[in-house]
Length: 258
Image (cartoon, rainbow, N blue to C red):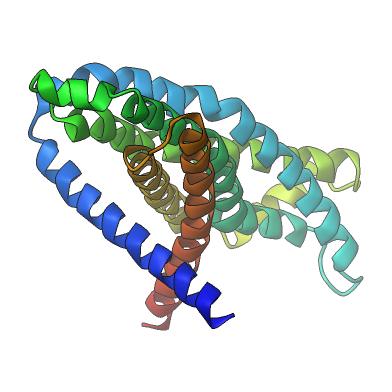
């Protein structure tokens, strides 16, 4: 048991160290704009635009379930319009960023790790170095920038779809009128809710792309190694999203306490 825990701890610390070094190298490589700029648009499309359907699908069903559960949980002493309040707060501050981030960790993280890992085992990364290109600037920086910028776009769309789905469920399934639902939404609405969710999404995008890139660059051993890198990238990204979610929750609570 202790051996397993120790091994897991060593692997975790090793992952943090590798990701930290890659973050520092990526920050330095930002100056090499001619190397990373040509790849940025393609990565933004792949990480952001192509991920919109899955993000909106998850948010849509989440909004429906939230509205139904809120209506079921509220007693007669609780005004029904608070369904709108619960849907708005939960979607924007928590579920849209986290669930979308977890879904994108699987889609984006595995893709990045497999792509860079394949390039590593086929010696394409070494070829880039031979040709005078910085592999971090060429491979990592455009993906990290795309993740930081496009994850909030996907989450923003997910917020809108989740709210729309919650409103439709309240209207069609719960018999709640549109004015009642909107009253609940406006009651405790704060633009901070949106900003908070989008900042979380940006941090998730950074974590997923940097961890997946690190896993890809560390790939060894052919096809089996590529599969292992993709698996590690997804698992590490999902764990880091949950850690960051707890971190932002503590920041939010400390901010309110002041």
